[in-house]
Length: 153
Length: 153
DNA sequence: TCTCATGTAACTTTTATAGTTACATGATTG
DNA sequence: CAATCATGTAACTATAAAAGTTACATGAGA
Ligand code: FES
Ligand code: FES
Image 1 (cartoon, each protein chain N blue to C red):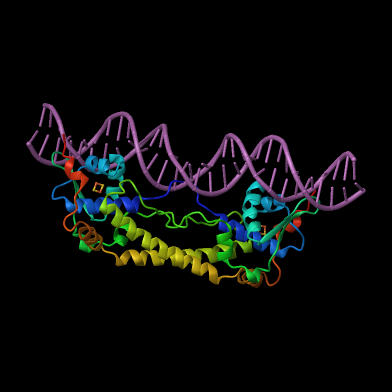
Image 2 (cartoon, each protein chain N blue to C red; image 1 turned 90 degrees about the horizontal axis):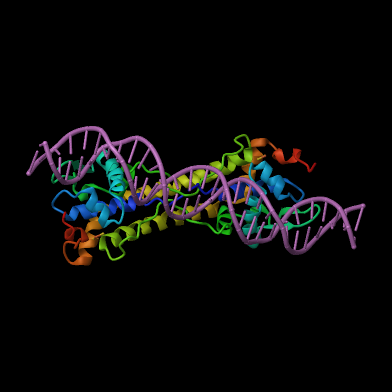
């Protein structure tokens, strides 16, 4: 299957939106991210349900952040996306009666759970504001966005 | 994509082989695992290159362990499989020049690396002999294998 | 020499994710 | 109110990774 990059995309979008002082349409976001507007809407829909962003229809509509970045961690975003599996490894369940299969799978699941817990904890430690300041430090000021050039025709 | 279950399959195979006192053919292993012999051969090929198993062609040929289980950890097996990606999350690289993308991806990669390292360390702590004794404890003796019923016709 | 079993290449199937098309719905503006 | 803009969604296609399959070459015993 394709590799899941929703979290990366979501963070990318949120940080871009933070640099804008007006609602941004799905179309503009999509063209900046080299993808399709529906992909943006689907992803942002999940974030809206968790109160991370807001949407407005009609003229001058689009997406805006509904919380300051300082109140958001990677963990919040990850969970808001309704997270599919975190690990690409899984176990077979072909013979549920086989004791060997049971022992193998229990052991693997334990290790998998530990890794997921660690990753979630790491995510919880990183606020989006921290990410943003990394960007600002690199640019010595507000980030220049390719979005800014692309006003509606 | 489909979820990767090679490690689970490999462990399952090795533990079954450990209960047998003769070479086991790919066909028998495949039928026990409800899969195809070529899948077994592909997977075992990687393990052979790392000295974990041996193969013999011709009559009474098949696969045998070339090291005691006590000398093998999950980590050894995992690495022998030539491990694809461990995490199902990845990051986009659409605009390599975008500083926001860079900051996001560096941060994510850091967290991903930590999780992978933890998982590998966990794997390194579990020997296959430990897994085997879990099975023996559950069966109060050597495991009964569905393989044993299936002698060649 | 006959048969068994591995070794491999090349193909098909499966399935999760991304991307696309099409259209309904609601909001703003003039 | 009408025109337009933008979200909201369903339904479809495309892509890619893993598993499974077919076919055949190669080597080892019996
Ligand atoms: S995509 Fe990041 S600035 Fe345009
Ligand atoms: S598959 Fe484990 S005993 Fe048959």
